Length: 168
Image (tube, rainbow, N blue to C red; front, side, top):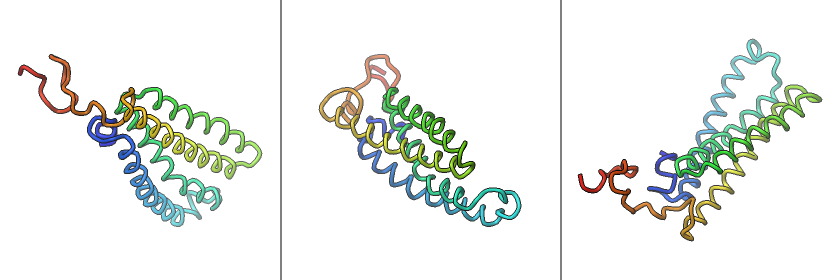
């Protein structure tokens, strides 16, 4: 849905981002709750060596990871590869530098802080870049909005809008 409709072809990018981030908050809350239940059931066995604070940090970051993934899908669906690449790079660099550098002095808790921080940073970058692309699209520039959603595909081109090419 987000990749196809939210890429600016059937659904305005800013509206898709708002919906995606709301959905990420709800689904991330459910995922965090399910993870908390799993942790409570296994904290004395499988997850016995993991501290509660580290688990809590990772679970509360679930909505931000979903939001970042949804923003990436919207960017990819709108053929905004630079935005997609920037989001992936932001997340990877955040994990590499923040999580790895905090894991060395603080162990698992430091790594959990870094993982959560990389998710939040990537989600914020996704929100900002998505809205910038939507503003460019409303002004008629490349990269966002629903501008061009009603135009016909070129003759003989495969239909990206669900309609058959002209002449058939």
